[in-house]
Amino acid sequence: MISKLGKQKMLYLMLLPCVIYLIIFSYAPMYGIVLAFKDFNIMKGIMNSPWAGLKHFNALFADSYFQTVTWNTLKISLMRLLFGFPIPIILALLLNEVRITLFKRMIQTVIYLPHFISWVIIAGILKVFLTTDGGVVNQIVEFFGFDAIPFLTSNTYFVPMLIVSDILKEAGWGTIIYLAALAGVDPEQYEAAMIDGANRWKRLIHITLPGISIAISIMLILSLSGILNAGFDQIFNLYSPLVYESADIIDTYVFRIGLLSGKYSLATALGLFKSVIALILIVITNQIAKKLGGSGIW
Image (cartoon, rainbow, N blue to C red; front, top):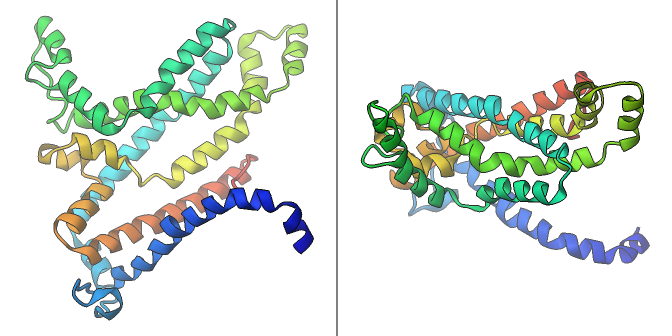
């Protein structure tokens, strides 16, 4: 065992920064979970604060607004999954059919770039384009004789705007994994199918999609595990009290009751609830993927 470690010491040294990062930022903060079961007093500290048992969880489940933010989180996340998950797959399949290398690389660059722009900047751009007070989009709408659309202040339009803007920002980046999976499909299968008379549609159905099915199942599992992550950065930079009814999610609610209102124990209880649900979802989804003949992540 020691000899093997000695032979692979450079690999373990390369792994060390990642391990240290996980310990500091992922495992060490778990110590704070005990706040969910205590009446936290900042003067007494975490360990000396009195125990409260399940008091904060009972308060959460009895709060009607907790039900509202949970429903908003699920609604926005499911809409992201329904409309956003297939787009990277479709883009990857389309790009895979492009035979002009220079054109293909240009398209890839254009659709990847939005991923590297922060939501702070994109929110500013969206506000300039979508505001009812001189926004570019509403100027076009009014030019055709319609009333300005309150994208940023209406509960009717705000969530669809979130979904569309998220797809525009992240869909291109998601194609990377599927393009990598497509590169692993054996070209001889396509050649054999062409000889047998299979058209492009049949080659897509019987060769391409089965070839990337493992990547699709893994990405679906990871997406479902984060079903309660409805996009804090995006919503926090775009929403306002006018759209709390439809866009206030668990993460923004935790931010307000925890950091702004100082209810640290209640915010921790809500965060712990979210983490437990996410863990249950990823285990269930992984098992379902295996039962259906796919590949799980463990």
